[in-house]
Length: 472
Ligand code: GBH
Image (spheres, helix red, strand yellow):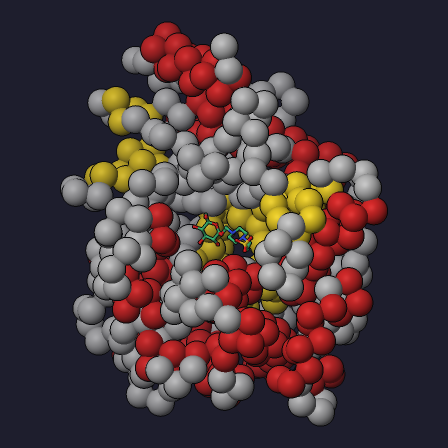
């Protein structure tokens, strides 16, 4: 029997055996894990993003964003869905935050929708948008949950995209205005700020391969968007710091540990190039190391977007770096233009894969933490980690055995890095409830809470129950 079939059968078997009982086996405490082992100051949270949960896309004065537009184009979203309603968090947040509290989480990461606050991207203010986030923040504080704001999680106002979006250097000014505005409105109550979410993803997927909004393809668009995103990353940090000297400021980077398929120089060089494009490109300029051109020569083309003084402007001394880990990448030499390397597809006979086709490999998060810990980073926080599996709602339960095991194994791996002395200070899982998974629509479910998108009924999955118990 193939391992993947075995795992499916095994999890179905477990679900069957334990259905009806409150705690399924996977939901039992793990003897090797306790929250105390992570220390009493450790942050335990969930991560979310505005466009994936809020819905209310054209309600109360919100402006159009690039995803609202992209979703209307034919064939962009796998199940032809949109984020127009999503989890309707805009109207349900009060109950949702109570639910989060009941699961014993103390930290909530969410992003602000730029076009809900400034519908045109700059200038005109939407007071109802400000009210909404005020209510979310105040609710968090009232029930003892610490809010963590992400300024940009991919939903650029469409009017700014019409002017070139991330490819237009003016975005430094637009983003500065937006950041300044948010900090002035919410900085009296919010201490934790994350400037960007995964610049690697929104530049690569949005401007190089066109799989995400705004759907562009091209090397120059990509390089321009990277440089401008890196300038905004640092500029955002500076603006927050200037208003809030005591703020806890970070940015969230996707990280994938990259390995060569074979121990051959050609393979090793290919792996190095992939490592640049997935990891190093987004952290090294921030640390004042410049762009890693030596290991990926086509980055020389970035030169045309660089202006005098940019090297300094790219730097910012973040309090923490958010690491988001989902999979490792095994690479070999290949024909992808410029990068001349390719990712090797994980073998589903040999490894467990998630619904996204991502390999479950808990050691990967440990390897990534180790890799980033070599840089002079003060504090590492896992700002996302999680998995989609084909969940089934059975009455009032979802026996997501695979997800329970996933979290336990990844947490052990995070703990290992922490025990080796690396300053990992928090873990935010992806994600609170099933939501709009970008170009995949609603099929992949990443939540520890199941959402019925017809009725907006939330059901705590076994993984949610496991966390409730673990965080007690
Ligand atoms: C996160 O992206 C997102 O922050 C979140 O919104 C999303 O719902 C969640 O994960 C689940 O997908 O190799 O060119 O694709 C994680 C997925 C992993 C996508 C790293 C981009 C690197 C660039 N990202 N990947 S590329």
